[in-house]
Length: 419
Image 1 (cartoon, helix red, strand yellow):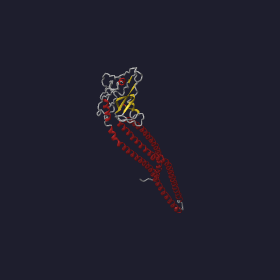
Image 2 (spheres, rainbow, N blue to C red):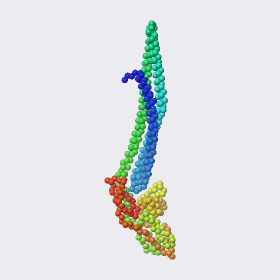
Image 3 (spheres, one colour):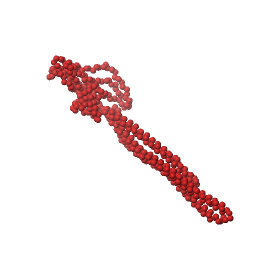
Image 4 (cartoon, rainbow, N blue to C red):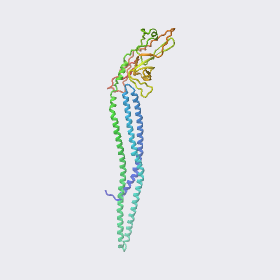
């Protein structure tokens, strides 16, 4: 498309003005929005870290449960993997700030000065050349007015020289306008190319981040899903524990202190008692001399337990004997002393069962002047049979997959309810 020099000059000036008045202000606004974008991502990663830290805490609580230990490990793994993804995202936006936002901000500040100077130089040179051309044209008009007189041939040579000067300056002006327009258009394109190139680099960084995040998540996802496909599956150790608690326990109670003193060879008086409960208080014998004989209950572990870094908990192996120092169960925990090491601490009551022997902590002193009486252990009051309390269906279940929950009745034994 053919354009006059004036049209091309207008295009050149409008190109410079577009860069100065539209592109650079938009770029400065883009930098501000990019910084807001960074702050939003930083806030998101911070909130994500807090979220997955909380998820890890829940997993740690589940990891100490006999039946949910596997789910606890999965929750901890999910938390760790997602926190690694958050770190990768933070690294991507560090590069976003360094390679894009910082560069745009620096380029914008420099470009405003550069484009202002370039535009002013173009305008001043264009004005200078236009002034020279206008002067040559004015000289030509003067010569032509003078040549209309009697001596017209006298000005012919000067008029030809003036015409050559005008033609030369017109050619130079057109060349200057063409080169100036090309340079202005290239300056504009270089800026848009720079912007596209920087965002292509950022896109490449995000692509690498998403690929890495996808790899980290998809590697673990099948195993996580496999662990939670059947919510009714119970570990064998828990099944053995429940079956052991359901079986009746036979405990040989300690003989009467008086009868034991009078006849230590064959005669023994057996006081019948029910299967001992871990929640029941230890019975004590009343001695007429005023000395209390305290019976300490011993239990035998049926599962190993590890205290980890918690110094208040007790570690033991399967089959160890523990002497209870606090006879009353507190929220599913007992406090005792491990016999073969002397270590003391809290441990889950569901990890043990009553042992068929007991020890006397205080030595008994028998007085010949007073008689000693033994109080038989209190029999647990048997409540009248009540109708089993129906339970609502579990919320975290698939009715088509889970078995229905059967009604249960309270038991004096310490049992573990599993649905």
